[in-house]
Length: 318
Image (cartoon, rainbow, N blue to C red; front, side, top):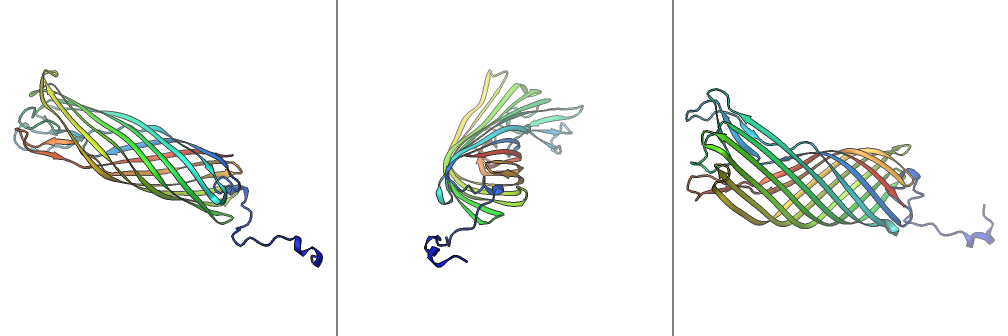
């Protein structure tokens, strides 16, 4: 219907265009360059291996038949934030930071005819006790520098692929105290510290359902190379006698995998999301254990670390 004399004024179609991005997808696929930011509240449970500290044995004889007591971490709160800039053609550059901290306490007491067998002490010295307590602490700091690319497949579905560099500093500590029989305020401290850096890759997808409500999924993988420092200190007689004071340090590559699923609502420059996330660090810690009474045999136990729980995210694009 356009008169022939005006055909030169019509711009040619863009073969790469997917059409106008609706407002309900704007935070996930912004049409213009600008800054963006997200802030998250984390409610996570931390699980780690090698946190056993005592065995409650139903008999004081040579037989070992009781359950092993494991220390745990309380459910804790953390934060995660990301700040970055959207470039033209779907590219972005961002910086992220995750902080999480928690602790926990456990105790066990031997009943009549029972005895506690400490699992952290050097054999042949503090072998039996009547009470045992354990206190755990955990500190988690992760920094990410990420470059991402957003792909809009249609008016309801977008995917962001990303990669970058991750720096991590993770500290874990287990303090135990035993009393009774062989133990007189016998204390054992087992600590692990990991510091490292490496590459990460991942992708996140947003599927718009109706009226800005959407489903969300994110998967991340990383290989972090760094140094694991594991220390063990054992004393008795109220710190007057030292049985063990040693450290084991090693460089290692730690694989990391994370997945998150959830949903939320977004419109124009604002997005709100909530979901469930699981992250696992494979073989992160290697605490030291002595397996004989002369100290010539040691055992290091590579142990996984996992964080899982709920997150609530608020996002804003400028």
